[in-house]
Image 1 (tube, one colour):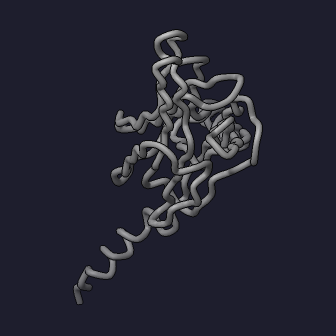
Image 2 (cartoon, rainbow, N blue to C red):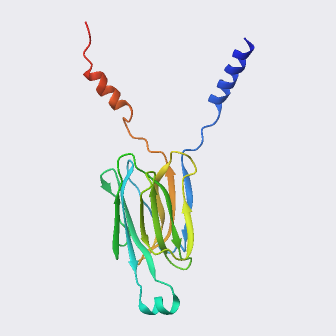
Image 3 (tube, rainbow, N blue to C red):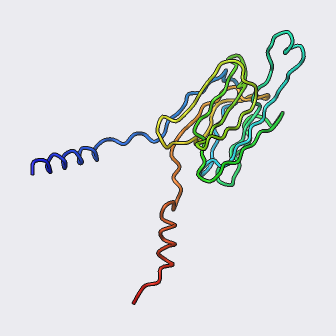
Length: 194
């Protein structure tokens, strides 16, 4: 009888525990000059486009062993609707469409503290990546604080040439009707036995 009381008290205390905040933020990196942005949309991110500008002049490469490559812009698709382009569409475009149940779970890359995001890598829960730019300068790595979270939006700043800072916002995606639609459909197709 005492053990039943202990188990009941334990279970009641578990229910009374505060629920963790389902959202987290990876602080922005980069120089941060220019116009602020925050991507937005309803539902899960289903595709991404990133534009990279690569100004590899012979002088820069040969004499400085440095390239002037940077992320000029990006765009996210939420469901079937594309967000605006943040930054510009100059340079080469990289694009990745996500599969069903695939989500972006890591954002990493490199930035130059004096100007732009130089390199951007988006990694999914299925191990696929989209990378743009060249991997030089200072590294960063963003990931959600809570298990099961995924990228919800990117924020930061851009100027006329490219993305000057970037941060990541993580959270859960609540799909309306998810989980119930299959059950309701199955119940509708069952013929009652009389």
